[in-house]
Length: 289
Image (cartoon, rainbow, N blue to C red; front, side):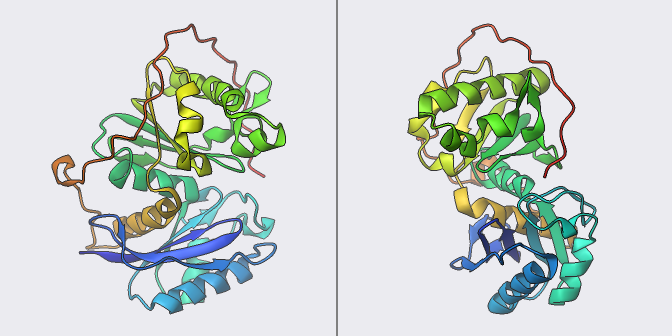
């Protein structure tokens, strides 16, 4: 059994737990500390250090971050202080905690976890994990391998910026009912189908807790659509998985489909309607704020 601490940095809270990376199970209750106001680097590093000290687990630590992470450096910052941009965060967190820290984009972490231990377990081919919340996070998985930092929430649908128009925040802001919101999401998914032809869409974020409200109203042409299963644990699990891959001698285990627990039948599939899909012209992606 490989046990690694996973930490998930969110806009309102920073939470962590030790993870058995062989099974994807959390081995204790999550411990959560509110995100410091402004989410400045030094303050967030201090909270991560508190979580590391709380669990006192030796070895590497995986940490999610709400922005683009490339080779440990932060290239964008969403809902956190702009001082993060350009920072070698792997080195900064390692210095602050005394542990070998490995960062990963938050949506990528959730995608890794869902693809291996959640709704995408055992699925071959292309899987797109999308998290609907304040924005739209994305993770592209091909045969279990992550293509990092896809940032597909920043695509344009004609004159619509995807996450500004179809996120869960947009649903609340525009006072949409679930059917109206699902119509927007359907347009977005149809555009992604034209670009990537995924075998499976996994829809995460807070909306995944009540899929019966919106899933039957989604319309796609050829892909399956299911709700995410790991919910608030996905980021923690994915962060630990990524750290396991990065540590020499601690290979991320391959879990055969036959050894995974059966998934609940409640994973609803969206109707496969063959209505014509209008191809939306894409504009260049805008940088994440």
